Amino acid sequence: MSAERVFEFIPCEESDPWIEGAAASAEVRQFARESLRWQAQEIIDEVLAGTAPGEELARARLRRCVAQNPGRPERALLQQLMINRDPQGESLQ
Image (cartoon, rainbow, N blue to C red; front, side, top):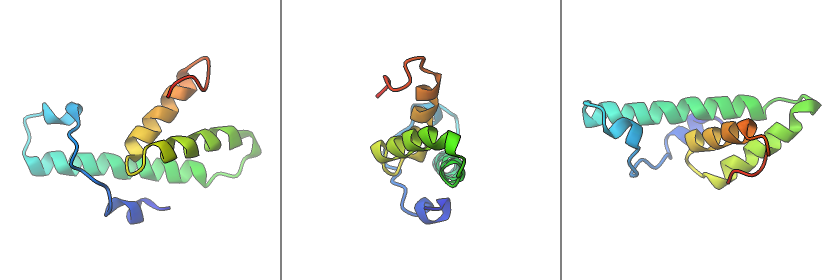
Protein backbone atom coordinates (compact mmCIF):
# COMPACT_ATOMS: atom_id res chain seq x y z
CA MET A 1 0.00 0.00 0.00
CA SER A 2 1.50 3.31 -1.02
CA ALA A 3 1.68 6.38 1.19
CA GLU A 4 -0.47 8.32 -1.26
CA ARG A 5 -3.40 5.95 -0.71
CA VAL A 6 -3.00 5.86 3.06
CA PHE A 7 -2.38 9.57 3.49
CA GLU A 8 -5.99 10.64 2.95
CA PHE A 9 -7.34 8.21 5.55
CA ILE A 10 -5.01 8.88 8.49
CA PRO A 11 -7.00 9.68 11.63
CA CYS A 12 -5.54 12.74 13.35
CA GLU A 13 -7.79 13.25 16.37
CA GLU A 14 -5.24 12.08 18.91
CA SER A 15 -2.66 14.57 20.11
CA ASP A 16 1.06 13.96 19.85
CA PRO A 17 3.00 15.39 22.83
CA TRP A 18 6.11 16.06 20.76
CA ILE A 19 4.30 18.60 18.61
CA GLU A 20 1.57 19.90 20.91
CA GLY A 21 4.14 21.80 23.00
CA ALA A 22 5.39 23.72 19.97
CA ALA A 23 4.35 27.33 19.56
CA ALA A 24 2.74 26.75 16.18
CA SER A 25 -0.68 27.14 14.65
CA ALA A 26 -3.07 24.23 14.46
CA GLU A 27 -2.51 24.06 10.69
CA VAL A 28 1.26 23.79 11.12
CA ARG A 29 0.88 21.06 13.74
CA GLN A 30 -1.55 19.16 11.51
CA PHE A 31 0.80 19.45 8.53
CA ALA A 32 3.77 18.24 10.62
CA ARG A 33 1.79 15.26 11.90
CA GLU A 34 0.62 14.27 8.42
CA SER A 35 4.08 14.83 6.96
CA LEU A 36 5.65 12.55 9.54
CA ARG A 37 3.05 9.87 8.86
CA TRP A 38 3.55 10.17 5.10
CA GLN A 39 7.34 9.88 5.43
CA ALA A 40 7.05 6.88 7.77
CA GLN A 41 4.68 5.17 5.32
CA GLU A 42 7.12 5.78 2.46
CA ILE A 43 9.91 4.13 4.49
CA ILE A 44 7.66 1.18 5.35
CA ASP A 45 6.64 0.77 1.70
CA GLU A 46 10.28 0.78 0.61
CA VAL A 47 11.32 -1.81 3.20
CA LEU A 48 8.38 -4.10 2.48
CA ALA A 49 9.08 -3.91 -1.26
CA GLY A 50 12.51 -5.46 -0.70
CA THR A 51 13.17 -9.00 -1.85
CA ALA A 52 16.49 -9.89 -0.20
CA PRO A 53 16.06 -13.25 1.55
CA GLY A 54 18.30 -12.14 4.43
CA GLU A 55 15.90 -9.30 5.27
CA GLU A 56 12.71 -11.39 5.43
CA LEU A 57 12.72 -11.51 9.25
CA ALA A 58 12.90 -7.71 9.41
CA ARG A 59 10.07 -7.42 6.88
CA ALA A 60 7.94 -9.89 8.87
CA ARG A 61 8.54 -7.92 12.07
CA LEU A 62 7.67 -4.68 10.29
CA ARG A 63 4.44 -6.21 8.93
CA ARG A 64 3.50 -7.19 12.47
CA CYS A 65 4.26 -3.67 13.75
CA VAL A 66 2.09 -2.18 11.00
CA ALA A 67 -0.76 -4.55 11.88
CA GLN A 68 -0.49 -3.57 15.56
CA ASN A 69 -0.61 0.16 14.70
CA PRO A 70 -3.29 0.59 12.01
CA GLY A 71 -3.33 4.09 10.55
CA ARG A 72 -0.22 5.03 12.55
CA PRO A 73 2.80 4.25 10.36
CA GLU A 74 5.04 6.50 12.46
CA ARG A 75 4.31 4.40 15.53
CA ALA A 76 4.77 1.17 13.59
CA LEU A 77 8.15 2.33 12.35
CA LEU A 78 9.19 3.44 15.83
CA GLN A 79 8.13 0.08 17.27
CA GLN A 80 10.18 -1.71 14.58
CA LEU A 81 13.23 0.41 15.37
CA MET A 82 12.85 -0.32 19.09
CA ILE A 83 12.59 -4.06 18.40
CA ASN A 84 15.76 -3.89 16.32
CA ARG A 85 17.59 -2.11 19.15
CA ASP A 86 16.40 -4.54 21.83
CA PRO A 87 18.98 -7.32 22.41
CA GLN A 88 16.10 -9.73 23.05
CA GLY A 89 14.66 -8.92 19.60
CA GLU A 90 10.96 -9.59 20.12
CA SER A 91 10.43 -8.63 23.77
CA LEU A 92 9.03 -5.12 23.15
CA GLN A 93 5.29 -4.96 22.63
